[in-house]
Image (cartoon, rainbow, N blue to C red; front, side):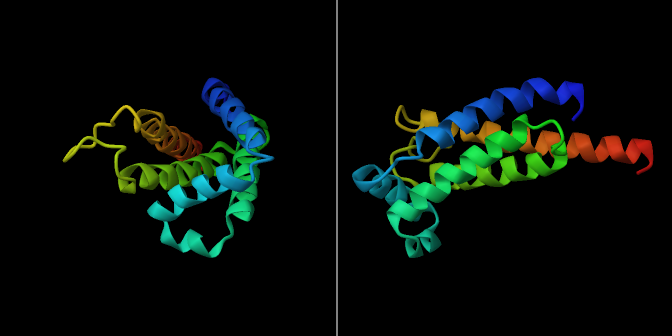
Length: 140
């Protein structure tokens, strides 16, 4: 890991790890609500039962957070994971009614917490691009 990646990876990694660990015991109505929102954006998720989806989401966030914090995991790899995860959340933001102001990408008050996930995509792509351009400069 490049030293310049440390602040970005640490800040997002700690947040993602905490989010994943917080969702560990999610069941019942909370799992159903989270699953329903996700299915609204990605209908294929309907095939996964809500409690299983909540566990997968928890494990995914915790794993991604841990990978971001681990200095031996290449920035391009964690960047791809972060961008992909963020893209799923952006899709949720774009497809869920009431999160955006009508005819706009601007968030409503309810959409602001989810609109921030655009940052995850940007941060992930930054890690990937910086790692790839750094390798190119080094002739690898």
